[in-house]
Amino acid sequence: MKSKHTDIIIIGAGPSGMVAAGYLQKQGAAFIVLEKQHFPRFAIGESLIPRCMDNFEEAGLLNALKKAGFQKKFGARFLKGNEMAEFDFSKKHGSGWDWTWQVPRADFDKVLTNEVSSRGADIRFGTEVLSVNRQNDLWEIETRDDSGNSKILTARFLIDSSGNGRVLANKLDLEAPPRIYEHSSIFTHIQETERPRGKEGEQITFEVINTQTWFWYIPFSNGDSSLGFVGPNSWFDQFPGTQAKRFRAMLAKTEYYKGRFDDYDFRFEPLQLQNISKNVKMICGKGFALTGNSAEFLDPVFSSGVAFATESGLLAAKLAYRELKDEKVDWETEYVAYIRKGVEVFSTYVKEWYSGKLQDIFFHPNPSPHIKEQICAVLAGYVWDKSNPFVRNHQKALENVHRLIASEKTL
Image 1 (tube, helix red, strand yellow):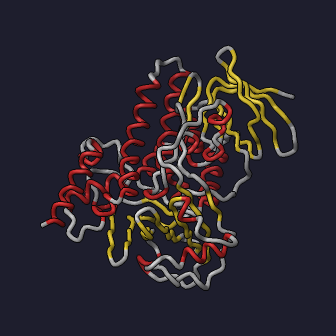
Image 2 (tube, rainbow, N blue to C red):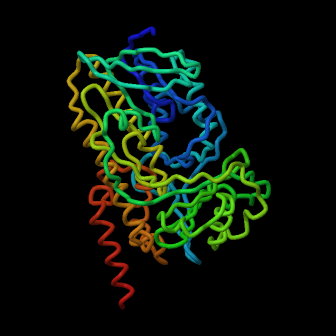
Image 3 (cartoon, rainbow, N blue to C red):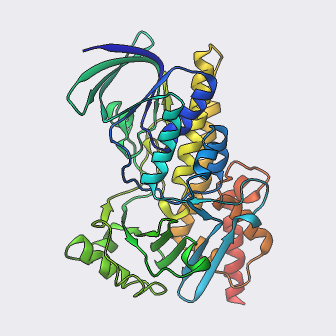
């Protein structure tokens, strides 16, 4: 069993890990990436938000992604019965990117790993982390590859970007109760040969089934489209039969999209994820940091997953590099407090979506353009911009607007 030493080990080669790797490459840092699967591989998180673009750019990955021709995303549409709310990222509060992408993650992640690999990074696919132990300020990582070969790696710092694999959360007993309980998701892809032209066949759409349950439609530039539902476990329990039969029955519950996908075969048997919200006791500690879904996942409704993955991956890489250069790093302030602040903002919006208050705001017949711009900036992922009152005072701002709407109804 051979051993090898490096400064940083990144666990996971998804967007969070690749943003961390891209940044570290630019600094000339020594690192190894361990990835359990082989790429391309299917993954969820197919809708990005503009804040991701800042992170891809800083990590040196943006040009490679632009060349891939993914479907551009300029905003989002929400539907509820006869009501519609559209958000255009170019009409948001503050500065920042006005667009991003909708992506089949198998292709998207492969573009990222190809780019990082082409620059000489050591990415070890098909490599599972068996154990992690810390001794004398070094991590000792036992790995096993697809051929059954075991190796011991040592590193000064670990960045866990393993996503749903949640390697360190499991190995270090860091799991914690989620912020949102008992929500599940089911999804599949179709090859949409009769897709409408223009915005109708290009724009991501969320259709509200009931206050707690919604459907997504995400068209990709390759002709495929992603279809999925999110809601309480109890809502899914009412549909018997195979996954395909259940999904067909769920599609019949939609109003706007009902019948549109009836003649399409599913590209794969619909996949259901139970209890999708995740949380941890701590997102960093002595010599390690958790990023993206390996730390916390809220809910897919506002597509915040990849944004937090890239934001935390980039920041963890920056701080780890500084620390290894013997600079003083206050992880509690510079990492924990920063990431938690963004999570708290999005958490408020997710919770008020499911309370129905945010839906009332979205579907107001005469929304204030100024308020809509500020909420749009949050949906674009700029949840650290304190010039925005819907970031700075997120809970109070939403409550005040909803109170105003409720008072209008009583007049």
